Length: 377
Ligand code: AOF
Ligand code: ZN
Image 1 (cartoon, helix red, strand yellow):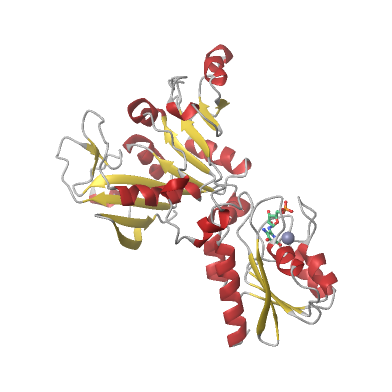
Image 2 (image 1 turned 30 degrees about the horizontal axis):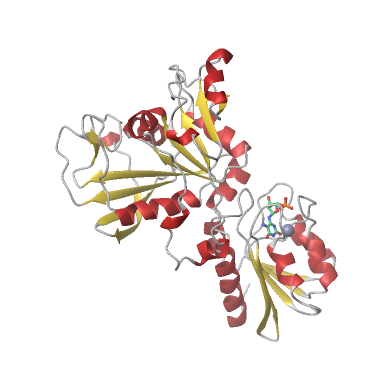
């Protein structure tokens, strides 16, 4: 299929619009839409929040007449009645004559039916323009729809000698303020932030998104006007050691504790402090099974999950093959050979090594952010 320069320009604009939903659309995907006539952009829209208008609806709402126009959408228009009516019908009723779709919607409720419906109505539909970029907009939504798992990002902070804490567990602070702001952005785009009980016991981490830490240049952040979605916070706590006085339980926001403890009496004090408790299946060694927890989170609608934890939980997630992207913030300091390693994963032979692909390296303040993609077996 060949696309014109106008097609390329319009779809690039639709992708930019979709990007504005970075921090707000979940569990829905980020989607952008541009309406074009005679090579001119005449309207645009993007999906902001689940339950509110889809990108196509928002773009068409500002137009009195879309007859004969072309719509560019970063995801196949939906064909189902969800929280909102089917966009395929809205486009048909508006009288557009052509729809260019970046990629099919893997949601089993849609999965090609939106495209079929448009074609049956006599609309010319082209699929596949900038599909790679469209896919990259929504890694978690795609993974959840296709495989029932969230997209898992692991975040680590280490010294240049790969240490994440002193032997005592002391770790504040390794990286500088700029890196910590960057982590706030990773948190804000996540549906859930996952950590271990050790992080709560050691650092009394709140794991919240702090709105004041964002830079105003971020268009998708500006679009939200300070209305942050607080991601679900999830603590892996197999034997229920989280103290009811923990800082993350104070204040608003949902906290879920994933445990192996089934005794309801033991759940009570934490529930009274505001936590929700979920008993997750065993990993075979008395601990919460991470794959089972990931499936549970995907079932709850979590697209993107950020794991901020120490070496043990990070190692368990990597070993289980659950990590998709690994962000290592590396600080320009040495923390010494008795400090804790990045990952708890003993290996003895070179052939055991786990390769990763470094897909991005950038300076963040005085630190370096190394983004690794972990290949799937
Ligand atoms: C579109 N355009 O902008 C988005 C779509 O519950 P609802 O009505 O919001 O439907 C959610 C589903 O619709 C979602 O799972 C995905 O398949 C699709 N998202 N589709 O045509 C949009 N956000
Ligand atoms: Zn729709």
